[in-house]
Image 1: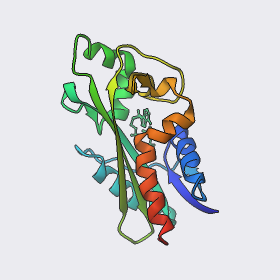
Image 2: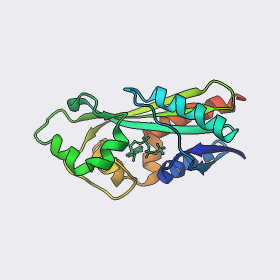
Image 3: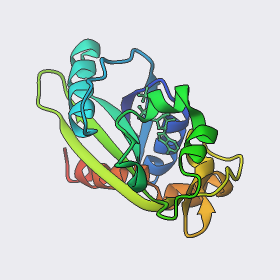
Image 4: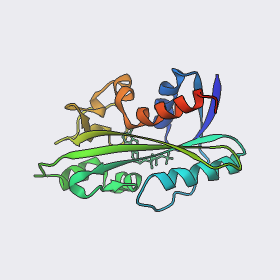
Length: 184
Ligand code: ITT
């Protein structure tokens, strides 16, 4: 089994990535060393810089995951600021911001950055379209899962395998896995 170091402070991401990548013979190991998160309007440069920085710091091949929830009616907010907004506002106050809003469309995006020491990073992105639920539902998953719904069900209401079959992370990791399988 090939083992890739996953630099993240979020154990839920590691668990999901571990599940998804185990099907293609890859295991992931969490490293909590962190990386400087650029302030950018897109996820790609954040993942790119982070992957390169961590590969050089750990002198090993690494992957990072930068994800964000882009809410249409809020002009794409919180997008790349999703972690900060989750920590400061949280789901209930996002639902308040969305009160009376009929356009509930949102997109969850994930960008996986992969890098080897001294090399250029590679990026793999995935997204899933969904809606902001009217209320928080379900206790599964993490973060925005209880308020992000696909096909009428929130990620929080889904069992892990269901979320992992249709999530933004699954979409990004599938591309990554395919690329690795080609011998990279
Ligand atoms: P690292 O940067 O250390 O990897 P993080 O949790 O800060 O961990 P992000 O910046 O990518 O990661 O996360 C943005 C926010 O979106 C954060 O609050 C996450 O909890 C949340 N999030 C990311 N993926 C999610 C998912 O699949 N379902 C629900 N919320 C998610």
